Image 1 (cartoon, rainbow, N blue to C red):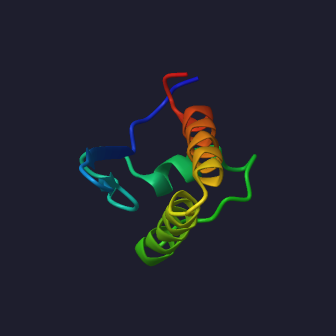
Image 2 (tube, rainbow, N blue to C red):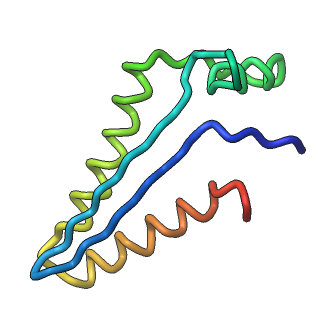
Length: 100
């Protein structure tokens, strides 16, 4: 299977009395040149897939929605719930990581 790099992620974690995560995500949604984009990858899956092209707004909305969910779970006052949320995030991340 040929894999394409569509996303770059930068994460910086700082802990000093409280936790700070700085996350930067770069995704090529629709610019086919000079490299490849998410919508090109979707086209390559057709006709075996019913995926449709993303708009930039849709992609940002979905991504922010997922991040909001994880941040909400991580900010629980109960340390057990926060630990479960961190483990769930790692499982999701690792299951979608291209170098698994």
